[in-house]
Amino acid sequence: MPDQVFPFTIHGLSFYSRFTIRGFFREVCLLVQTAWAIFFLWLLGAALTLVCLARQRFLGAAAHDARRATEDATPASVEAAPLVSVLIPARNEQHRILAECVGSILAQDYARFEVVAVNDRSIDATALILRALAATDARLRVVEGREPPAGWLGKPFALQQALEVSRGEWVLATDADMVFDPAALRTALEYARGRNSDALSLIPHFEAHSFWERVFIPTWGWGMLILYPLDLVNHPRSPLAVGIGGFILMRRAALEHVGGFGAVRAEVLDDFRLAGALKHSGARMLAEYAPRLARTRMYTDFRGLWESATKNWFAAHRFSLTLAAANLVWVFFVGLLPPLLAVFSGLMLLLGGGEFWRQLFVPAFSAWVVCVALLALINKRFGVPAVYALTAPLGWILCCAVLVSSAAGVLGGRGLVWKGRRFYERAGVRPPQGKR
Image 1 (tube, helix red, strand yellow):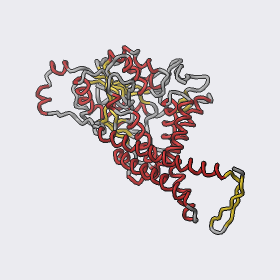
Image 2 (cartoon, one colour):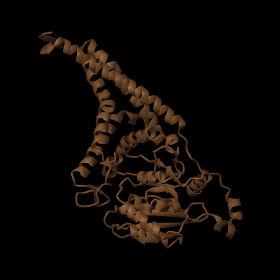
Image 3 (cartoon, rainbow, N blue to C red):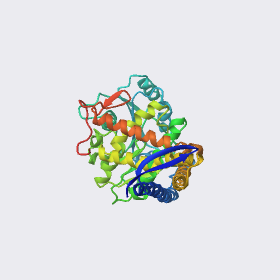
Image 4 (cartoon, one colour):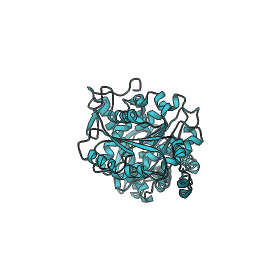
């Protein structure tokens, strides 16, 4: 079919375009079909999200009779309870909730535990805060951390130093921004032992108070809900494993079997990788949602959010440029394209556009409605107002920007920065081999 000059008019303004009529209709049909395909993908995602939400279970505090526990707490019964060592790496935590975190751990109603806090070369008042707390409770021991040796990142080495001076049969690795319910340790230990588990990670409530937290946290929380369904994660034959650094309770024997925290010495995503190492070694690794037992606020401002996310996101893609590029393409087509098409086609309809724009608007807008409705449900689980679901495109764009920056820092050799330390730069600790 020959090329033709085809006139079209919008509000009295005439435009001319040279094109092949057959090619034009083919492209028009392809765009509308793409919009419908994305809509059906969102329907599939809606079904998957609703199933995951319906099957989501929350671990609550185990029943505890304080009066009876006090009566039964004979020296022999206390000694029979396994000793738990709580390990806290702390670096530059002066302006965070360090005192509240340590206080909530020392307030646990479990009978027998110790706390080892490592001051990981802080340049603020972290050491003073820790030593003031230790002066009031003999169960807290403060260790002055050393600089990481070659091949080690800061957090894994801090945890390894704490492990080496601890004595517990069970080890709880946590973060300095966690706050525990008084029953958290006892409940987790009873749950793990009752299921003959070697390790248990509790997924806490992630607080979101600022604008950017409310835009960002539900977005990746939604992804985790779908990509890591706990029914599958907790199946012993599944390769999936989940570890949240704020709460990983492990038998010492299982941890030492994989080499302690040396197993993840160069991993910035140390919690997930440690969970994977434990599971792949044959240990029984479990994860459970426990928003009533533990909570954390990971970021307090945009800078903290950006640094924390960029240090993890390329690692979450196993340092694979292919996986990262595929994710960016997926987010564009499924997350960003529907609202863009809906807005543009809606404007064209308002300007007097014809049938094509209506055919494009219907699937694009429908996909966007499904997205907003699902994100509103996810927001409810995170305690975020439903209206923030309308900021979904901003959340997708932020996710993409974080991933691009994370990949560029690692692949470009300049490295990434977290709490004043630069890592994965060309001359320093590089990402684990065989994963890019």
